[in-house]
Length: 281
Image 1 (cartoon, rainbow, N blue to C red):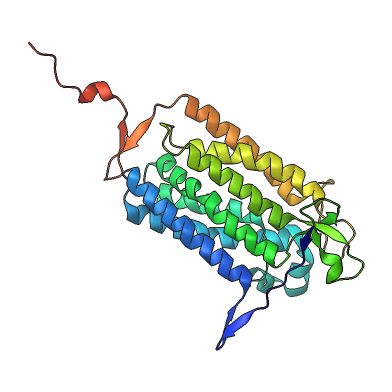
Image 2 (image 1 turned 120 degrees about the horizontal axis):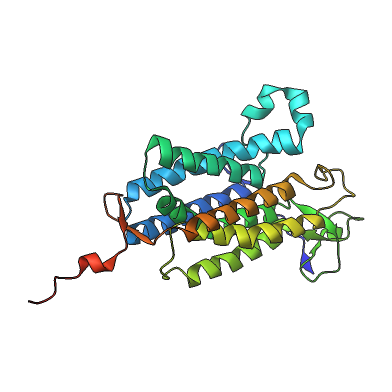
């Protein structure tokens, strides 16, 4: 059993320093640096990597808030209308964030600054689980995702703070720990000669099934329980879409040849025979 921990928000003048915001910021900085380093190693222009990530993350926050309001808490929209959508700092859905980030990533590398898409998206995806560790740790430290009662050894002792709640799953904690596992897998295969887009597939196949079943641990006895669509949470429907998308990318990659990307961002075939000197006469 894990004791209930609550870290209060501190202030530097008028600026609040809440634990969720600090951990999410730390995750963003770490992910940006990991992607930047891998982009350099892959021969990508670091400006394209950094600018693309900033745009992708911004779109992720917008998408995450819209789904949080419209998908999980439509009562907020009914009460406040358009203002509930504009207050992007008030609530965030992870799958809404995935959707917004995907749209932003495609928009940036396909339209705003056209670049070889899979090569750049794969660099962004490689860094994501490392950042997600901190993002979900932020959720865990503020107990955003309280689950069912349990006797599991990683259950959190909510009873000590809120009599009657008992020991419960903390899904933010579980997902932060699982993000460590995915990050370890990514790190272990980082030097293999894989086709650009492979990390997108690995993420979808590792994350979606586990998150689908993890959502069955969400509470159904508290006031803040999540909405269900046909007995499934919005995230579970999102998991099915993510898994299908990962399978589609896997099929697409089967017909692709490994490529390297030159410093100017142009694709080059990985045909080492073309680089060999002519045979001696």
